[in-house]
Image 1 (cartoon, helix red, strand yellow):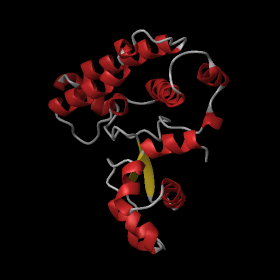
Image 2 (image 1 turned 135 degrees about the horizontal axis):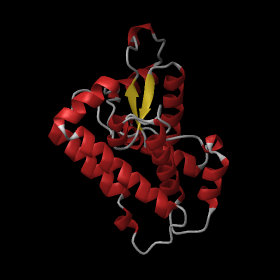
Image 3 (image 1 turned 60 degrees about the horizontal axis):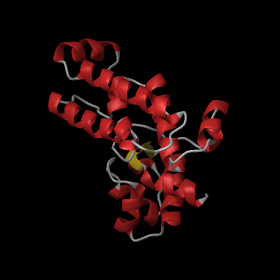
Length: 200
């Protein structure tokens, strides 16, 4: 795993996989201890500090737990992101995404990956996933999630930077998040949407 891949990996937050029976797993002490610290909100980087282990060691242990289907991946913000492709291996990029990742501009590699992943999420995910909410979120929880997510992707945040094709991507993401918020923040619209797309 390269330094860039490891940095992206460490931003992610593992969560216990739904329905996993921990007692049926054959865990070693290291795996069990790490699994006991996983809460769905804590990033892999923070877990390194919690279990006093190197990033490489924690990454290896988490990969083993992933293969056991004991954990699934969340993003740094706590949204259920992995299934929607919010964090993906660079080998999974299509030609257009690969070209965007290498175009000239001021964005860092990780910022580009994140924008590409959220753009993908908008195309394939639900409004719940777009805002990173699950269960039965209140209107205030939806509002907080929207402001947090939209702040990260607001085009003004990147004012003065050379964005290339990412400028349009950021506008598309911001508008998609606003649309998701308009539906989910309205109780009547949220109820109708939940019948069609139940929250995760």
